[in-house]
Length: 266
Image (tube, rainbow, N blue to C red; front, side, top):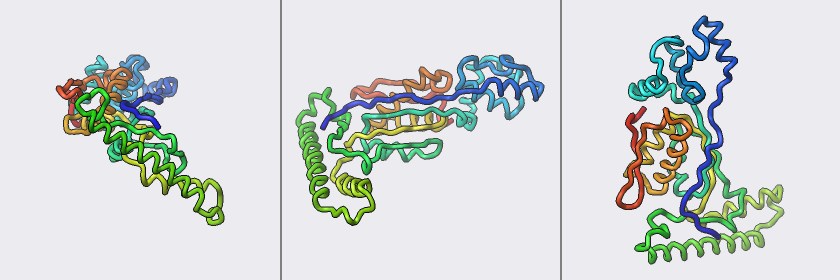
């Protein structure tokens, strides 16, 4: 059994453009070629948004020439639909099932694949410590001991329950060993707390990600998911500064952070 206090976030997929096909489209439509028609340069995320947005008016080679001005105009005008064309894939580990219960409520624009407690044995599982009980907070040591004891007891109960079920559940009632293992684990997981660590693959579009970061990065959000939202934001601000650079991060007196955008509810 192990404890974790902070998540790990990996940016694993991002947009790519088939430039020869874009060039063919421009030629057939008799509009200026690249780069006159696309001012985003090597920033393929911004290019996807620019190409899709200019489609609405067939304004390739016309209008705003500066890509930053172009994107900011879309954000300030709340023309959010074109941001749905850009998707990012993230792997997140070291988060609690309490967090993912909140995370998966974000449905529109999101897709999830999460570690299964039916297929994966939790005997050597990990637990996530809530930020309020972090080892950095000396004044919660007594409360932290209560939590640690409870998590140790839960882990022991899980192991005991798995062992008891392995002895008592007849093999004859199952079609395969895999089905029997799933039945044992799905019963044993009932004693595991919300603090149990999980891993999840997330794919989401920019509009959905901005909405998630704005809501879950706010002061009223749970501390754990707020920390995750800001960690995701930090990755995406580096990867796509034009799309996420308007978010500001502010330090609070309680040791946590919040974030908020210049362009809200895009």
